[in-house]
Length: 471
Ligand SMILES: Cc1ncc(COP(=O)(O)O)c(C=O)c1O
Image 1 (cartoon, protein in one colour):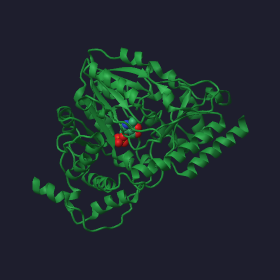
Image 2: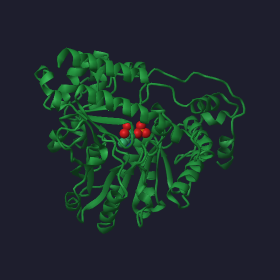
Image 3: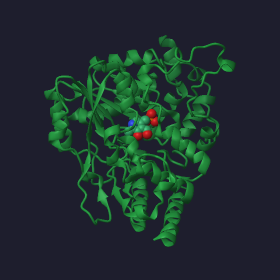
């Protein structure tokens, strides 16, 4: 086994160029993501549909904004600012590394690797995060490599949440948190970030979206198993301050709760804001599982590689879930990401470092988007981090024939109308709220700004033209 791992970690010698870029739209187009649940006698003989119905733990979770809006995009072919991925090439050294790995002399790099994380990658992650959280992180016992941050969330929630456990979820939230808690048998307790926006302003900041300390405190009790934190935040772009994180940390300590900290946008923070890892707050390492994503870190979301790190005592539960569903993640991708990290580890303080150059590039895109949204009359929330922007479109409500769409929530009707008629697609933020709180998201739309400048300018043109014709 050790011999195999040693060979696996040997750097590839040969370098060859290979085009790995695949048009994401064509990938999406080739897959019908709509759930198919009909059982006819022709397809399934005499199978009893009741017997093969969706298991109870998944019932009620059939609706997915991603399935619906990918389908909508295929039908309406809009300029798609909905989904969160770049529409331009990732850094060449990362894609080149993948090409080198796949075609290099070390053929074993195309075979299975260590289940909890490829040795070269966990070594790189350990070097990086030991610096960032200012404590040694054991590459073998304190890190788990997963199929995207998504699986890190899944393994954490499945591994720690059981029937009767309550999990505090801050709204709006990355939409998989709720079904993941429910399928684990847990009970989500929702606490919304509330905007303290004054009327009449042209724009606002994600810092203005705040938790009510009393509301948050009252969500905790003896049954609280965990809180899910997301900073920098999707979709609001909030970067939680030290004071806000301290409030959360104090509640975790007081109620003996775990903090699941989704930090996939950890490098995308705009000055003067700073990303603070809650695991670094006093007493929090012992009760925090932090989650990251190679997709977000290196702009390769299609690679679907992520990780979780935390104390060994908490990580064993995640490892167990992982070994029984995924077991091991793709070796070439792990090796390529490891090489990417090794390069960046050597220049973390330099402006050349991708973790610095990407946010600098995105800040200009953020400002461009904020300006054109404000120009058309929406009220954008300027994000402190991440690559999403939400905007209040309600000042334009009278200009949009919302009754043309049938959906219950206004933001669904607004975004669908925009996709069909203006050919510009955003995502309805009410999807990121629980059923009772959906009205809190109805006045907003979420756009993604990690897109080519020409596409952002095109979006500006579409909105400007619409403004000229309708306002
Ligand atoms: C907040 C948040 N967490 C987790 C994920 C999932 O990341 P991955 O693509 O690495 O699974 C995303 C992806 O958009 C996200 O926005």
